[in-house]
Figure (tube, rainbow, N blue to C red):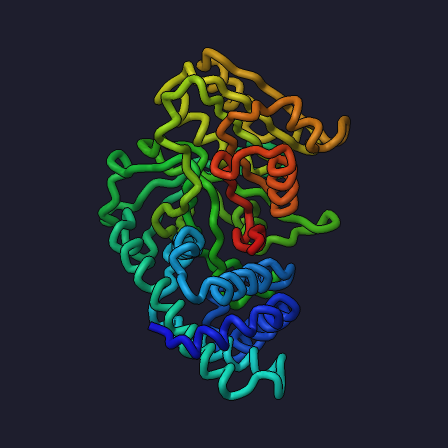
Length: 398
């Protein structure tokens, strides 16, 4: 339990964190990863480069400072982050390293303004916050479908858009995994552990990929978009999976994770429409949600809204049509941005019922835009659910 004096000091640092939080966390990652290169086997260097991970951490630290008197309102965010940590196999022994370099970064960035009292208070606060994460993640490790990384074999690799492959993988014999009994929740992701032999890479590279289907009997299905910048491959793992991994090859996975899931209480409520809104490869968890909804109750009104640059980039076109044909009440909107405007507030006002339960997935920019539009339209926050392809806390305002 933090003392009142410590909590007072932490709250007094809020204005500084609001102004310089991202500078502190950027410095933190730079120093920690340069001195603990083994952690490069865990952290996504692309998110570091783009600034998404430092922004997410800065948001988390700021939220903790603002709620230091009572951290319970942050439990939902802790669980979201904890899901990622469990999937990446981040363990309690990693937290002291993070704490050490976070305090060093605060001191380096703030200089003399970071008094011994502030550093001591943040050291105590960090330990308190770390213990919350460790406790939550301990239960997640217990509940995981399997421990650590398990070997899987690629049994199918299908092109489902111009730049997206769907992979199907089955558990290797002796893994102890019975896919037929594996509970899959639509919206979950698996984490792939690879060691790409491209782009002069020296480290393991871990990436989360959403599951495309809730039926694991014939294997787990996930989709991978080739990440590019100005026409050149940018995603280390996506390039490796696209170009180097084929049927018969082996990859390592951690158990399904994630808190992006349909509201079970509404699946059979036909008076509450379901809106499934996606852009690009963000359709993958949304597709699994469509499958889950149809399996449970095909009578519920469904609004399927899918955006892509053009028809050849429209992922899972045939599969989507096959599933929607099983629905009793469907409104389908396909947006090709090379021919029409991007989805905006006017579009959502016209197409999305105000009382609908909305699930969104896509890039960070897409997510931020859709959430902002829906909130401007006074859509209930509890009816807006999302999973960005990137650190979720970078989309949160505190």
